[in-house]
Image (cartoon, rainbow, N blue to C red; front, side, top):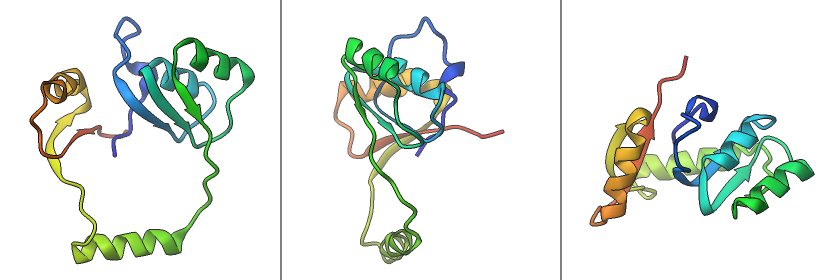
Length: 124
């Protein structure tokens, strides 16, 4: 998973992402919607969307979902056990820095990858 300060992305850039998971909420949700491609999805995990944000998403043809998420340490523990046992794997084709996200996207668009492209970002 990549964490990205979407507010720091250039405003002149095209929407880059098919899916954005917003774990911060508030004003960050505006940036999440703006960074999502037409037909893409934003998961507003942190808090619900206001009517103006729902309208923004609708105008941009972005699906805005507000799933109810509750802490589940036991469930996360079971997932960790599956990862450790090798039963739960996500194939990764390549890892790139967030700054190279546009290049990674173009690479994905060309097809032929076996696995996910993972964007990384150093926090702090």
